[in-house]
Image (cartoon, rainbow, N blue to C red; front, side, top):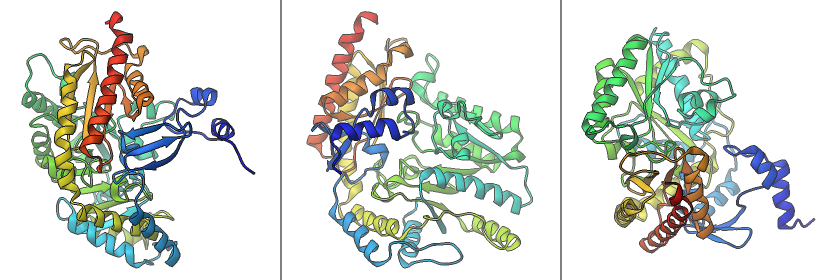
Length: 460
């Protein structure tokens, strides 16, 4: 039976529960947008409107919305072997090849890979593995995990406890105990008057050390961090931040887990965010652009020393008691391998480095706008802070929802962006975007800012 578009929207409104959505507004109004097709960096909605995707879906659509090679790789694998478990020692060829390839291309030497279905699952599994490692080493008290406010590591119970997103904790009885938080390294909003970036970074590192000492160094399991925070609104770390933070980790022997779910596979202009910012992780998770968003898949990469600890536990229990039905899926592996081939053949990193020059220059030019207080980015990843008063660095009244206003106006004129509190615009288009498309997107953003300012200037 044919269903017209109005009926589809009503079905979505009445039957489909959306994550990260104002439930009452959706139940009342239905979907803000119904995306029906996509090609290149553009998506098309059910009302015939076309938009440039300025947020890569959810930071995952690296190669755009149509790619014959990825579709063909998925189809060929579905025709040959649509599913194979990786439990009980069983495997299939493509997952073994993908594991080898990821180890060889890692930012630092890693020896082992385990596959999951999402970034959330990968980080959740890594938490379990670190706890298991400490039990194997007769250090069961090492359970406390340190991360940062506004960091994002997923929505499973442990991963969201690790995440510094209060709205994801509210009314769920979360976070769990033993999840400690440090300040967001947002230099623009959190620095004191006259404080240099290096001084700010030293203060953040001192906070980190104080947290370790207050908790007890022998109770700390690990520090989890994104190279550049995405969930906080594309927050680029200030000068000196990562050297200072890594010095603290080395001093106290803290395991450093780097979440590359967003930064990995070229977003920063390097294959890994760790390479861009000089990080030396002990383990890493990746997802999103691993398959260019054509299939749900993630991976954990770690070193032999952790593997040996897990093996010790496996000897005692008889098995590594962890896994997901669809982890290491053959279709996902086939798509991931083809995506990695495409990245190499198109010189993805070279392309991002070239296009990032006009992208970042255009974003930084928005600093002249009366609504924009700060712009910081790297590669094709930029955060734009909207403020009421540039000099005082004061924010707008949250009730005005200025970030959402700019986001919605951009959508109206043909650009999909994401607004993140407090009134911060995250701009991260598909990695295949070209210079003309960058200019078009930035022109739309400027128009949205101008119209928002007309509405707001009398209240400034």
